[in-house]
Structures are given as C-alpha cells and as structure tokens.
Image 1 (cartoon, protein in one colour):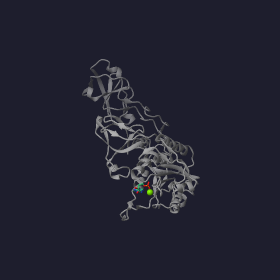
Image 2 (cartoon, protein in one colour):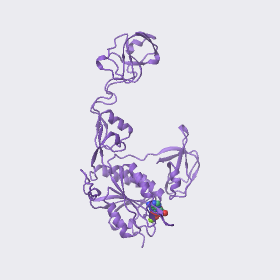
Image 3 (tube, helix red, strand yellow):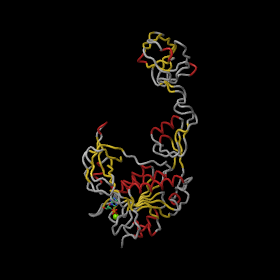
Image 4 (tube, helix red, strand yellow):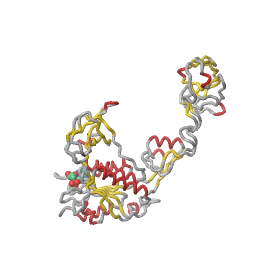
Length: 437
Ligand code: AMP
Ligand code: MG
C-alpha cells in the first residue's frame, strides 16, 4: 500500500481557521443544513441556540424602580441641608399602585429596593443619610434628579428585541427570557455529529486490550467536546486500517450532519483516510495546518446519502433534514491531544454553525508566563498548561508532557498556552495568549 496520491494543502493556522469560518458562514447563510426546531422548557434551555427572537412583553422595568432602601424625595427639597421632610407613607416592593401616595413639596415616602417610585418624587436618598422621628425625617445628603431610580423602560421598551435568533442561551439570557414570561423557548435541533475512530490497534473501552493494543479514548473525548459544543455525538464502530471497511464506515458517518474521523491522516503507510475520501471524490479545503499538536488535520466535504435522520428507524421527526448533497468532515490526527486541540480550533465552529449559532471569534485570555519557553519556529503551538494564581497574580506555565500522546499530562492542564509560529523564545514574565479548555 502506498501513501495517498493527494495534492496536499498545508495552511497556516490563521488561514485554516479562516477557511473553516468561511464554510461556517456559508452554512449559516444557506438553509441547506437542518434548521429543525424544538420547543423546550426554559429550565432545560441553557446551552441551546435560540431559533426565535425574544422580545420585551412590557417595559423593563415596568415602573420607575428604586434601586435602594431609602426615602423617595423631590430633589429640589434638599437644596439646603439638613432638610426635614414629612413622611407620608411607606412603599414596599410590589405595593399596589392605588396605595402609593403622591409626594408633594416638603414630603417624602419611605421606599424599599425594587418598589415603584411615587409620582412627584424624582430621586431616592439612601437610608444611611436619614434619621426618622415619628412622621418627620431629617436628611443630611442631597441627590440629583434620577439618583437611585431606574426609569420605566430604561432597560428595554415594550416590543424591543432582547435576544436574537442564533444566540446560545447562557444564564443571563435565560434570566432575560424568564423576565419577559418565556417559560418555553424555540431552539434549534442539535446537529448529529458522527465519530469514526480508525486504527487496527484501537479497542473498545470495555475490551481487555492485548499487550500492543490501545483503548479508544478519542471517541470519548470527542463525544464530550461535541456535547459541550451543542452537538449530539453518534459513535460508530472503530474502523480498521483497510480500505473497504474504512469506506463502508465513512459512508455511514457521512449520513450525519458532520463527520469527525480520528487517526489515519498522517503520512504513514496505513494512514488511509485521505485516500479513501479521495476515491469517494471528496473536496479537500486543507490537508494540514502549521500547528502543533495537530499538523495533519484535514477538512473537506464529501457526497453523502440520505441524512442520518431518515435512516434511523423511529427517528422520523417533524422538520427533519432535507436531503443534502454533501457532508462536511474533519480528519483529526489520532494522537489524543491533537484530536482534542484540533476539535477546539476547527470542528467546534462548524458544529456551532450547523446548530444555527451566530459566528464568534476564538477567545484568548492573556496571562504572565511563569517559566521561560524555548521552542522551534514554524508551527503555531497550543501546549497544555496550568493557569494559576488569583486576582492580579494570574500566571501560566507549561505542564511537563511526553508529546501529543500524553493524555495524563493534558488532564492535569486547565488551558493551552498559544505560541506564535515565529517565536523561538518566550521569556518568563512575558504576557502570553492562553486558550481555556
Ligand atoms: P494515527 O493518527 O492513526 O497515526 O495515530 C496516532 C497515535 O494516536 C497512535 O499512537 C495511535 O495509537 C493513537 N490513537 C489513534 N486513535 C486513537 C484513539 N481513538 N484513542 C487513543 N489513541 C489513539
Ligand atoms: Mg492510525
């Protein structure tokens, strides 16, 4: 057997990422991919992607809201201090409108946080600056109009768009949806992501491995990453390093919304993934990226049969995928850390787009490097690292590892240090980019 007769396209990290972002944008712009939706209870909507706009059903806040416990006053009454005002009532949060007195000149009402500010008052003085005796209160601090009040509708007006279609719901978005009465929200269906591990040496987690066999860890790390990215993993059986068996499983995997292969994309004699996909007339966007780990990563699209939905007995859902001409795939390098890193860098944005999430850029934090790093130039590096320290003292340091097969070291890490391709030394104390995991 020989190495795949492929035109290789090895891109810089930035170019490879741009290619992925372009394809993700195409998915979002077209309605080719499945855009089926589910109605879910708000309590199980965290992490799902909205398929509807959420609008304000009333002004937010619906009344001028006091942000403090104190006294609702006319600010002009406090021009000379201390000022003594007549207390004409007390307004609790939730007070009925017909029980709220108007505040006239020389008057005030005690008011609680979250209560409606009465007509006539234009500010709230915090309780700390007051001494009440009977129906009189002495106030020792002036206020400007509007102080400690949020005006009716200042956060949003009735009918205003609060959350857009394509937004992944986080805790704040859930709170906002709840505040406008959305106990059920419409979200996009999760894309199905097929996982196909390749390699004659790979055995299932439940099997007893022979002395030279390796347990399949990649399918499991990928399943976890897919779920975190919003997808639904579909694990296929492990494919052998043999053309026919591999092809049959690739064909099955192409029925999902996205196919992730791991292993078999390096230059070795039995790395057959690209060769099989070439025979299937796949289009390759790139066949490598100048990164470490993960250099052999492959991205492309290949003709597929009917969508997965239609083939799975009993899963005929309403609004299921329309037949699709081709399916995107990634060939992720088999080394476990390479698999994890290339998923985060390249596969995640495709899953997000397939779910209908609006595009977003990769996020890097910056921290001070604890210990100097010396490295060869030419590849952009994403190396397992430990971010530690609190408050202003965050620092980051590489974990000692044995290379991109070292899962134990990677499990001790909580982030990746990112080193530009043209740097051969990063000095201790330097600010360095960090990608969280
Ligand atoms: P490959 O990319 O097929 O050349 O594999 C590179 C390395 O990753 C080899 O040491 C493989 O044994 C290992 N590997 C490949 N697939 C897996 C997997 N699913 N789980 C754990 N290790 C794997
Ligand atoms: Mg292999």
